[in-house]
Length: 187
Image 1 (cartoon, rainbow, N blue to C red):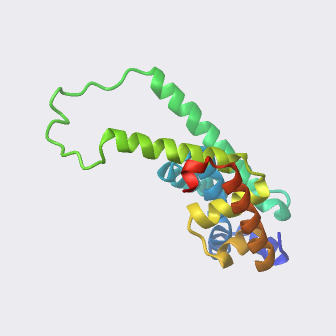
Image 2: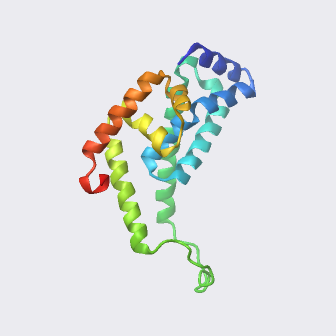
């Protein structure tokens, strides 16, 4: 982490809200990318990101070393994901709430046909599985750029790399991704 980020952490710990907002701006896409890689669901990753940032804001005073802010934040994100999975497992064991037999009869279905939905889910699962198999140094920049839609400047700031390094990581990462994807997906 750069010295300006360490200063922002110190300011945020002393109650400077704008310093924390700047830290969020600098790191949120990185955390989102990590959560999206784990969940494969944009909405779930966004919810977990919000939970992560709220937890970080509330417990910033517990961060002993400002230099470790990013890894601390990613640990909070991982814990939020683990907790969410545990909650879901408990809810699955509970009985579903009763609903009337005609509750959904009047709701129009605007989603694609089931076979198309299944094909999209399978394709997304295949691409995410290959992406997850890539080394971390390529996985995060690819996720930030092509799944989270971040621009180069944002990715550089999030990851703390130079423009040349980022371009090299993206180039080598895409090459690896293409090599590992089944030929019918590249076509």
